Image 1 (tube, one colour):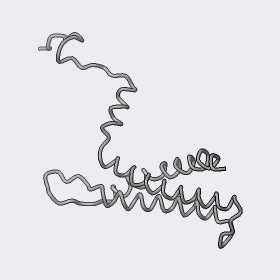
Image 2 (image 1 turned 60 degrees about the horizontal axis):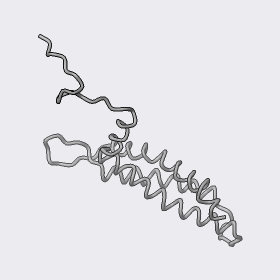
Image 3 (image 1 turned 180 degrees about the vertical axis):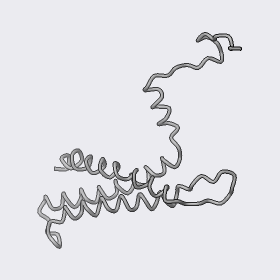
Image 4 (image 1 turned 135 degrees about the vertical axis):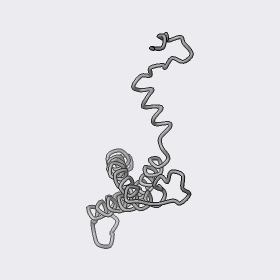
Length: 138
């Protein structure tokens, strides 16, 4: 037997949300492991991008640096450091779900989450640093 149809004014009726409302709700209620993975990579990327921009500005203003112009090497070190630190920190702070147990286990999945969170963050932070922040500094 089918339940009687409910109208939109019925207290148990489900309100349909727009695409934007659904995405905003997902953004506000993001799972803690995802937030931790993104923030760990973001903090490292921002700190290293600030150091890179300072190095770039110093070279542009004629500072004599030991080893000469190593911006390409600095970008490679930046990318590698963000990926490695993002992977390791996420591995350490994002436990695998344990169900009813009390032991906290780690797995390669936590590290993979950190790596795949670090890739776009490393790219976006450096693009913002080079394309937005660097021109402002002259």
